[in-house]
Length: 516
Image (cartoon, rainbow, N blue to C red; front, side, top):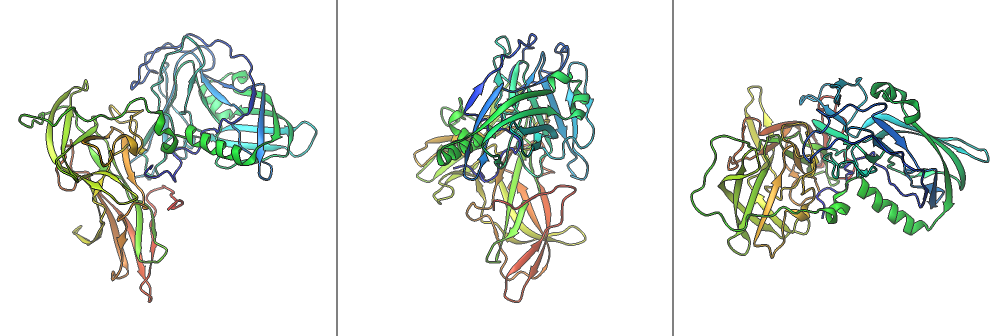
């Protein structure tokens, strides 16, 4: 069961459901530069001649309606990287009070794009404009959409590199710090996504899709490569079945773990046996660095007695956090942290506590203890913190649920365990491996049992949700000075004993409690 499947991993990838595509031939692209997974192929490659990107669509697309003239389609629109990889790096300050800065990294040098092209980490704002004109006359429909240039891309030239190193989604967390978007040379990615269907009458439409002029100018695109026209036919379809297929495909292209589970070629494997000999921790070398993000999605429960929230702890280090568990009885495992050198070779291990079997319905898997702690605290003017309530949530199954900053050193752009099925085990497991990759965070949303704070008896006032990583110091990491973050919440207690909460905004981050 995905930990927080209520939240779309990206809001910008297309649904790709065109029942019939009449394909125009793809012109052969220039020779593609080679690249291996986990590296940045843009630097050091030969500069492309002409446009680095080309917008493509079939000559004809047939889409089917369901319900009241509702249509799901991405028109088959793709963006192709021509000649060399196309790569964007985006970052913002960890104070969250400045804009997102996006840099186009190319063989000709880095180019910082204008402010505002990334209002969020969901993609390039107002990237694509689509106009649909009824052939027989009528109202013209237009779309103006954000575009994520990281998706479930496909190779479109036979001599293009066999694999793509780039992330497969624009992952969403309100406190994301850095992202990488990219299209491998000679590859294409879907460009149009919808969070809701369009309302289009049955009939034929002349469609023109164009890349916004500011991106044409910024990337030096030829006019012919920045626009495409085609025919759209909207026909009646099998509503119920079509809707199911549309939603399933939307989740797949958007990176939803609920669908992507079966697509993993690799699964995190524990060590073959319990470690023997003396425990050794290398004196130096790569280390994980656990950092919490501010609590988010904060609200009071419907009955007014519990403070609910989501919390993310992420790995800002240059090494994955790798913890193996080995069965030592019916309901416990001994846990060991493993260490690796810069080439990925195991160079040591350390006992780091235990894992426990959690049989509650919303868990039902093995949890590692001592990863994080959630407390509701007060703080005085001198900075002294007083704990008021501690969450019962104190054990975790580690998984890479949120890409927090893929620009950190040695970040893993495509980790293998982005869902719980690869790492949490079941009741029959004798050993498991839990991994938090560099650049990735593990988010626990509110519906997990025991996470919220019971507010009964607390007076009105200013409080803070404290998220603490590695609270007992059992895990070895490069820096422990950044293991706690506080998020202010202002509680009001009413005469009937219920509460309401006001949550001051952090910097310019806009968040929502939708889905809780």
